[in-house]
Length: 154
Image (spheres, rainbow, N blue to C red):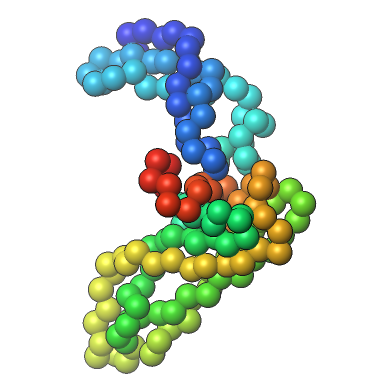
Protein backbone atom coordinates (compact mmCIF):
# COMPACT_ATOMS: atom_id res chain seq x y z
CA UNK A 1 0.00 0.00 0.00
CA UNK A 2 1.28 3.43 -0.86
CA UNK A 3 -1.62 5.51 0.50
CA UNK A 4 -4.92 5.21 2.35
CA UNK A 5 -7.54 7.94 2.59
CA UNK A 6 -11.14 8.28 3.73
CA UNK A 7 -13.69 9.15 1.03
CA UNK A 8 -16.70 7.74 -0.78
CA UNK A 9 -17.17 5.10 -3.47
CA UNK A 10 -19.94 3.34 -5.34
CA UNK A 11 -20.90 -0.17 -4.14
CA UNK A 12 -23.45 -2.60 -5.57
CA UNK A 13 -26.60 -3.11 -3.51
CA UNK A 14 -29.81 -5.01 -4.16
CA UNK A 15 -31.18 -1.80 -5.73
CA UNK A 16 -28.18 -0.78 -7.82
CA UNK A 17 -25.12 1.28 -6.96
CA UNK A 18 -25.01 3.30 -3.72
CA UNK A 19 -22.42 5.85 -2.65
CA UNK A 20 -21.00 4.88 0.75
CA UNK A 21 -18.25 6.08 3.03
CA UNK A 22 -15.13 4.14 2.15
CA UNK A 23 -11.45 3.63 2.80
CA UNK A 24 -9.67 4.26 -0.51
CA UNK A 25 -6.37 2.45 -1.04
CA UNK A 26 -3.51 3.05 -3.47
CA UNK A 27 -1.07 0.25 -4.11
CA UNK A 28 2.07 -0.15 -6.16
CA UNK A 29 1.16 -1.66 -9.52
CA UNK A 30 -2.58 -0.97 -9.18
CA UNK A 31 -4.20 0.95 -12.02
CA UNK A 32 -6.61 2.77 -9.75
CA UNK A 33 -7.62 3.17 -6.13
CA UNK A 34 -9.64 0.37 -4.67
CA UNK A 35 -12.30 0.82 -2.02
CA UNK A 36 -13.48 -0.96 1.10
CA UNK A 37 -16.75 0.22 2.67
CA UNK A 38 -16.14 2.16 5.89
CA UNK A 39 -19.25 0.88 7.61
CA UNK A 40 -19.73 -1.86 10.21
CA UNK A 41 -20.10 -5.40 8.86
CA UNK A 42 -23.53 -5.73 10.50
CA UNK A 43 -24.80 -3.06 8.07
CA UNK A 44 -24.33 -5.57 5.23
CA UNK A 45 -26.77 -8.36 4.52
CA UNK A 46 -25.29 -11.38 6.34
CA UNK A 47 -22.12 -9.38 6.97
CA UNK A 48 -21.34 -9.25 3.24
CA UNK A 49 -20.18 -12.87 3.16
CA UNK A 50 -22.71 -14.56 0.89
CA UNK A 51 -22.81 -15.50 -2.76
CA UNK A 52 -25.97 -16.09 -4.68
CA UNK A 53 -27.12 -19.64 -5.40
CA UNK A 54 -29.78 -18.53 -7.89
CA UNK A 55 -28.55 -15.70 -10.04
CA UNK A 56 -27.37 -12.15 -10.08
CA UNK A 57 -30.38 -10.03 -10.80
CA UNK A 58 -34.12 -9.84 -11.23
CA UNK A 59 -36.13 -7.54 -13.46
CA UNK A 60 -39.17 -6.17 -11.64
CA UNK A 61 -42.32 -5.39 -13.64
CA UNK A 62 -43.79 -1.88 -13.47
CA UNK A 63 -46.52 -3.06 -11.08
CA UNK A 64 -43.92 -4.78 -8.86
CA UNK A 65 -45.81 -8.09 -8.96
CA UNK A 66 -43.68 -10.01 -11.47
CA UNK A 67 -39.99 -10.86 -11.15
CA UNK A 68 -37.89 -12.28 -13.97
CA UNK A 69 -34.83 -13.86 -12.36
CA UNK A 70 -31.81 -14.40 -14.63
CA UNK A 71 -29.25 -17.12 -13.99
CA UNK A 72 -26.84 -19.49 -15.71
CA UNK A 73 -28.20 -22.99 -16.27
CA UNK A 74 -28.36 -25.92 -18.63
CA UNK A 75 -29.36 -25.75 -22.28
CA UNK A 76 -33.06 -25.40 -23.13
CA UNK A 77 -33.08 -28.63 -25.18
CA UNK A 78 -31.22 -31.89 -25.73
CA UNK A 79 -30.24 -34.76 -23.43
CA UNK A 80 -28.35 -32.43 -21.12
CA UNK A 81 -31.00 -29.70 -21.07
CA UNK A 82 -33.41 -28.69 -18.33
CA UNK A 83 -36.59 -26.76 -17.73
CA UNK A 84 -36.66 -24.44 -14.74
CA UNK A 85 -39.46 -23.38 -12.42
CA UNK A 86 -39.33 -20.65 -9.82
CA UNK A 87 -40.84 -20.77 -6.35
CA UNK A 88 -41.35 -17.76 -4.13
CA UNK A 89 -41.89 -17.16 -0.40
CA UNK A 90 -42.92 -13.73 0.86
CA UNK A 91 -42.94 -11.88 4.16
CA UNK A 92 -43.50 -8.23 4.98
CA UNK A 93 -39.73 -7.63 4.85
CA UNK A 94 -38.34 -10.02 2.22
CA UNK A 95 -39.08 -12.06 -0.88
CA UNK A 96 -37.17 -15.33 -1.36
CA UNK A 97 -36.87 -16.96 -4.78
CA UNK A 98 -35.73 -20.52 -5.42
CA UNK A 99 -35.22 -22.15 -8.80
CA UNK A 100 -35.67 -25.87 -9.37
CA UNK A 101 -34.26 -27.66 -12.42
CA UNK A 102 -36.20 -30.39 -14.19
CA UNK A 103 -33.95 -32.41 -16.54
CA UNK A 104 -35.50 -32.87 -19.99
CA UNK A 105 -34.05 -36.36 -20.40
CA UNK A 106 -31.65 -38.55 -18.54
CA UNK A 107 -28.33 -38.48 -20.35
CA UNK A 108 -27.17 -42.06 -20.88
CA UNK A 109 -23.57 -43.11 -20.34
CA UNK A 110 -22.68 -42.51 -23.99
CA UNK A 111 -23.94 -38.93 -24.03
CA UNK A 112 -21.28 -36.32 -23.41
CA UNK A 113 -22.61 -33.20 -21.74
CA UNK A 114 -20.62 -29.99 -21.95
CA UNK A 115 -20.18 -27.72 -18.97
CA UNK A 116 -21.15 -24.58 -20.88
CA UNK A 117 -23.57 -22.38 -18.98
CA UNK A 118 -26.55 -20.93 -20.79
CA UNK A 119 -28.38 -17.72 -19.94
CA UNK A 120 -31.79 -18.71 -18.57
CA UNK A 121 -34.56 -17.00 -16.63
CA UNK A 122 -37.74 -17.79 -14.74
CA UNK A 123 -40.67 -15.57 -13.89
CA UNK A 124 -42.44 -15.62 -10.55
CA UNK A 125 -45.56 -13.75 -9.49
CA UNK A 126 -45.81 -12.07 -6.09
CA UNK A 127 -48.95 -11.62 -4.01
CA UNK A 128 -47.92 -8.02 -3.22
CA UNK A 129 -45.54 -5.61 -5.00
CA UNK A 130 -41.84 -6.06 -4.17
CA UNK A 131 -41.59 -2.42 -3.06
CA UNK A 132 -38.86 -1.92 -0.43
CA UNK A 133 -38.64 -5.59 0.53
CA UNK A 134 -35.25 -7.20 0.12
CA UNK A 135 -35.01 -9.84 -2.61
CA UNK A 136 -33.03 -12.95 -1.66
CA UNK A 137 -32.31 -16.39 -3.05
CA UNK A 138 -32.85 -19.74 -1.33
CA UNK A 139 -29.63 -19.44 0.73
CA UNK A 140 -30.28 -15.84 1.81
CA UNK A 141 -28.00 -13.99 -0.62
CA UNK A 142 -29.40 -10.64 -1.74
CA UNK A 143 -30.22 -10.28 -5.43
CA UNK A 144 -30.18 -7.04 -7.40
CA UNK A 145 -33.72 -5.93 -8.25
CA UNK A 146 -33.95 -3.61 -11.26
CA UNK A 147 -36.96 -2.02 -12.94
CA UNK A 148 -38.01 -3.93 -16.06
CA UNK A 149 -36.18 -2.58 -19.09
CA UNK A 150 -33.41 -1.01 -16.99
CA UNK A 151 -29.89 -1.61 -18.25
CA UNK A 152 -28.09 0.42 -15.61
CA UNK A 153 -27.59 -2.15 -12.84
CA UNK A 154 -28.89 -5.42 -14.29
